[in-house]
Length: 97
Image (cartoon, rainbow, N blue to C red; front, top):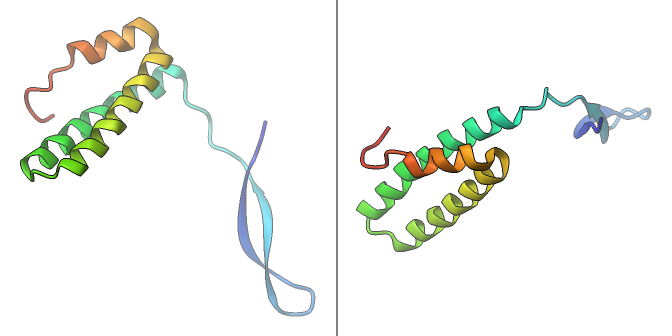
């Protein structure tokens, strides 16, 4: 299992501080269902942000959030297959959640 590596200031033998690498164990991995659920909640938050950007009439922000929305939808579809895609199609985007 790969480990995350973080940099930390470590004492040097001659008394100065230097940057050293230490191994940091990863958190427990999420299941595909947990990832899909988290992404689905994130997708709803993006809907809210997109709505606010539209109200502000900020076309560039709307475009950016729209691209993020497409990436999240693609990831959800890859993780959850047909069930996740059905959740997105049936999602109520008429009001904020």
